[in-house]
Length: 72
Image (cartoon, rainbow, N blue to C red; front, top):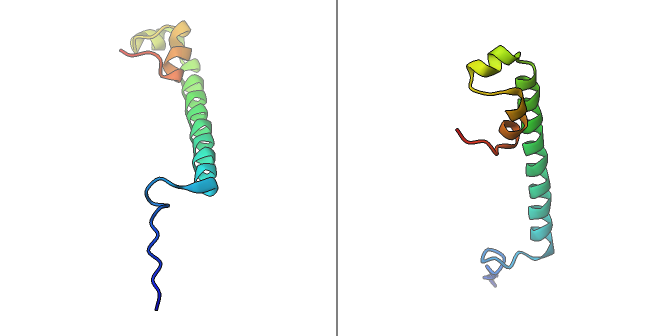
């Protein structure tokens, strides 16, 4: 009985379908990131200025927080 011993696909030679799978995976990840950012925008946008101040934010910083560009 012959045994196929080709592991080149495991070592990084993924071919067209592997690259397509990674591409689709990156698109799905991007969509999920955008959904999370929109969820954060809505939640913070629903707060009044006093509530935002209580958590150390002002209204102009909501977009920075939603995009993950603000570190505190």
